[in-house]
Length: 600
Image (tube, rainbow, N blue to C red; front, side):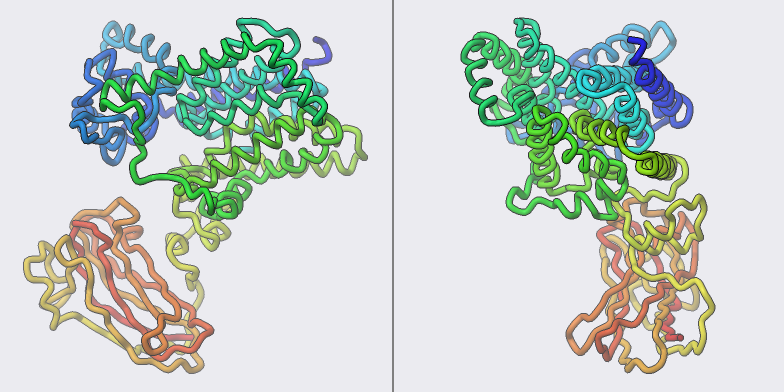
């Protein structure tokens, strides 16, 4: 035990850092509306508990609208949908509700005595789920430490724990968004490996039942996690001869396997019973129009996209991928199960059509797999411990850089404001990287490739429109910005006319389109923000298009001149089109003083 102190200290440091981050830096349990612990997807996972224990209403979930109006846990009460039976079916499966249950019950007992409403969403419930999720994370790291110590030296295990917490997005999904599925699944995977190791050392009924229960709970949390069965089936098999030995082991202990299967089915049946009770059907596809592209998984985007690429935002996991080479040489019985699971897991993860997984910092869907990827990572560190000093120092230097990088992105995602969830682009990424403050103009790079921040030379006005002849302002609730008329878009009129400007490019290489905008109420939904669009065209063929979303820069009741800079395309063009689109928003917006200038 004396030789395992370093990993113990690392676990203690990581746990303290998770607690400090979750309770002090960004305490979601103190926050309101969509920043609260029980908000967005978490509220969907959680709805089973108040429906069963407080409102006794699993079929209609009629409290949903009331809770939404009172707490605003999401932009809309989307957590349940109306089934053809007339009843409402929860979008998410029940696994997280089962895991939240002890924390929920503790909050429910204490809410009224402490002067809070026992409605399932008041402060005690937020605190209980948040604090409980931190405890789950600490348990997961403890189990992972124990698993790794079976195969790797203490120093390597300590390095893995420090890297996971400080240099990967596990930090965000354990300390801040710990109530999401990924933190709980990470701990379930660590527990599954812990049980599997001990089952093969000494088979017993309780270990078999435990494996079955963990598998069932993982699948009940996210149905695709059924692939976790690969871990107990393949663990410790280095080659084909050992595979035959494993099949003989299964035949010898078939009763234990049967018990594990029954335990798994018992937990999984919770969802089937719920669906049958609510809808009358044993199976309900609750994700409706969302699904998988099995023949065209989004592997490149999932790994390398600036929008949410795993290795773009968590480059430290390159160490884990490289570690498969050393794992093959050092611990082949671990190599095949870890590789098989990782490949299948990534294929399923990136086959999901919404491969960026909503408001994800990097690839949040990869976080639970770190409980398995920790093994090749530990193998690489073990190998490095035997190498020359310069390699070790280089690894430490990269690890420190990746840690700062991860901490910086985590800060920007929550308090810094430079991480634009679901909207990140390559130009914007490089413009803000490692900065803490950038000009407002940088936001344009979320929509277009170019911003011009220097002096303009040789400016020439080629088009101007004050919309005085425009009749769209009839019935517009906004007064004209200047003169007698302004262009007005709203619920009824979504598109402006297309303003066409014949133009033959000469020496000048840039174009600036500017206009003045006035809104009544700010549009917060990015996909509904009014778009200011410029197209370069060669006859009827579109050569290039640029746009900005004007509500990024426009607040309620504000009037403001905005401009869009475009670099001329390399391909020839002979005219320019300018248009405005309200993008399905019902909020009115007035537009005036459109100008098109070209410059060097």
